[in-house]
Length: 537
Image (cartoon, rainbow, N blue to C red):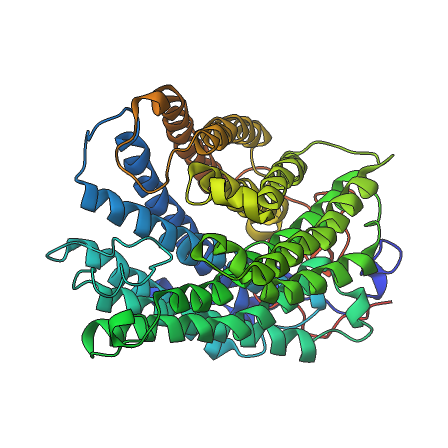
């Protein structure tokens, strides 16, 4: 949605330039980052933390793929392999993807809606600074006697209760802190968007990224307490003699799955809705057209959020549910693909007959649309109950959700980084390095995840350190793809550092077709963006 077109940018009100902000100079040294309440600096902290966790989680994925390079037990003990699969999942979901989107929200939402800052700046600082401690605890548990959590990132009971090690307490505490951080961040986003929009910025004039984050924030507030309840029950079952998930004491292990997935499925959309907002900003900018069907995109996003609460048991088709329940969850899951299809259709319609140029943000956005659609189609296959009986707990599922979360969420974050990097740093990045990063990533990510579909269809179970001989060749290809994808991200790291240190000066609006208030301020964006709220016409 266009907020400040070229014609009305003159009416955007007074915008502070870097020369005018000398009286707002930031603190120096470490104190600047520890005590900052500025939304841009906190956004930067989130983004660097997220990238660090992305590399840590990626290193764990390298351990997994090195072990699976050929059959037999090669490098690590089975228990350590299980720790790697568990902590890799937790770090990537809670440490890489979610903080990256929160960092983008912190940086961009106030600029997009004409706000001076986030509504609750001290809460903002607190919500970031508790995260490093949560992950220090989680990663530190790997060095305990008996090792870290080894029960899968979904920590199913009784694996996480009866059969887990002493590190479970640290795991539970760290998940609680992550959840608290998410809830505080979500409250901040909602209050900022509802209260601090510039004059004239009605809800239906907000950029799609702001809309998707507003809906995501409500999802976070709704489901994070459910996760807190699940981990607390795991804690009391393990250490305090309760029997929530122990059949011998009158509990039910399947109850755990219901509680976990009631959190877990909306969580999937928490990790993908902001991506939809990013793609809805980039595709129109590089097609030099307005977004097709803005209102339908808003309603589709809200529909996905609402439907996400009634599809959780499609993760549980093999637990012996009544047939009526299986049919209900099957049809609801198929229904959720409709608003998602609306989004894909609208992006394609936006590009139709547009004057498209293929800079790095657009290339990652196009890769997102194609590869996320592959993940969506395999999700539709998994939604069909009798078929899911074959796919369940095989590498087909691993392929499906990695297409959604890597070539989906992670690619959208890469696209956003390239799109807004000139605004953040004041410099243009190296387009040559960006193209290298893109082509290395897209080739390796498909080499890594596409063959997993065939492994799953042939019956290879997930979360195993050893496998039958007939899966050897495909696993070798998958591991090579994994190593290549991991190394490709070092190109991105080099590019970002190079861009921060210097390069061609970025204009206020480096992309011809980009629209919105964030492009009406100087590059790099001044520490305090708007002294006077801009007028949106």
